[in-house]
Length: 206
Image 1 (spheres, one colour):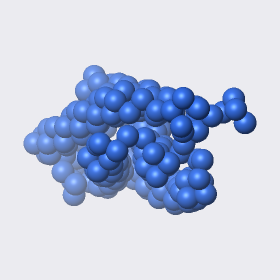
Image 2: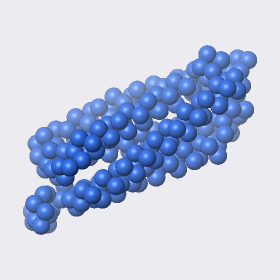
Image 3: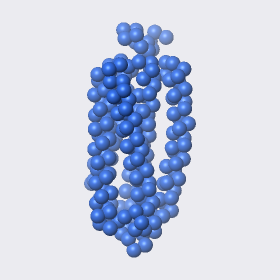
Image 4: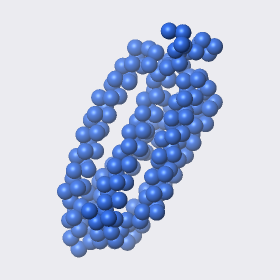
């Protein structure tokens, strides 16, 4: 269909799914996300079951600082937007713009990770360690699991950017970049749930 083909660049307008390999990667990725969703649902359920088990330790109202978490949320949501702009650039075969947006995504993700490490450091410094209470254990497990996924997603994107730095957009690397971008959106969606269930409900005492 001519309307879906960028004839001036020689690539289809959706290079990420133009080949059978790309379609298989896309399908396999959704199965992978299904497993990831179950994993996070398990950790969320555990947190909700243990969040009132503070023993002699501090409660969520005493520990959580929403201004810091709000900044972290804005960083991650903005990174989701820049990754979308990168995908638009990819579909236009503008590799330079694509790389710029993806590196901005990486910088925003690294900033988020830095704030999360700082948050954990401050909590531990204030006596809210992993073994302080059932609540603290479930909190660090859930938020730490998400942080590990952020680190993995950043590593994934960085490796792709370095590996294909000079190759431009091809039918081989487009599916890889696209799937990595989808994974980044998944991480952002999970964080929105963490922000709501852990921090907002925690500060509100619900």
